[in-house]
Image 1 (tube, one colour):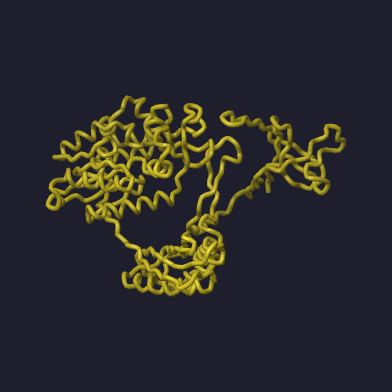
Image 2: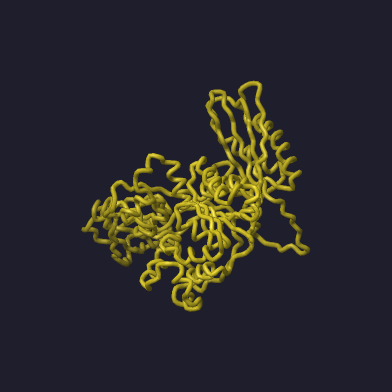
Length: 494
């Protein structure tokens, strides 16, 4: 009979945060979606939960409950790197494993037949747990007969568990509390109000009624809990990086000569990737300096490639921006590959004024020259103040445009960061207020005020916002700060 194991690194982002700040372990700690008072708590440790600081709250609300609270955001790239590292550790315990696409830190392993390699499945599970502990990760392993059964057991338990029969696994699943499954807090509250606090009561509900009454997310969870919707284990492919290094006879600072060394190393890396039928996805090079320091840089082509000239062009852009405080005595290069994709040219290629691949190549050059965090895109956040309602996130790839003819031309609000202080308004002005000077003329129309209050957890903010139209036709977005008794220009509608 097939056996499936679930390895659950509970709240992996929280574990990464505590690894970076070991002095926080004795305090309540949370992971937020962004480092602002308006940030939403995504994960909370036991000390935070004991202080009623729960996922879904704002960080400012948590601070009001505990002065000892510590929190920060964890970058998506850091989480992805940790998942990749854990996959490589788990590869030694099963030939087939899969990382969850829904939840970082959850892995499924094929445990079928492993009892012939280990004294018992209990010993196998404990070996996995000890191996992860060596790298600073705490995990719970459950060995069962189904994906959801092993997941529910690992998520709700604190010790490893090996089920002896499928009936034992089903009984454990029915007793699992819904509050420990990492569900949407709003969904959990709704189920608790209905008197459902275990998965057994949830599974017994009719599927159609769940979708209509509780939404699509609850319906998907119901299908998974009943054993439906799971595909066969999609084993991840293990890809080892390719490494090469070269020592220099004397400290080197010249960019051209360092690029020549990188070119020699890159040729060796590309030959090995070609032999593996892979393409280069990321190139990481380390420069060991004469003073004992080390610089590490990473470049990535717009798409996995074996084009040495294009990759060296990115390396040249990155090297030209480096300010080394000593000469380089050794260069190490590491290449991560990805499966080679066979591309077929279209018989009748479409002509377009916008070339997505060319744009991706241009963005790759910008990252190489100015850093990987240079190319970002705006994303919306929940916030009270206008400047807290948006943020920036890395842009990896451009999406094909999907233009639609708008019925009404959209208005764009340009926000100034920080707001521009305006001169004091003279109440004795006979001909109107000159907000931006004589060039735009006086204010001829005013819409407002729209009052806004907040910031009591740090510094109280009281603003009165107005839309004003000048004689030149410009629509300006201004506000009066009651606390500072000053006027500010916060934006413009175009």
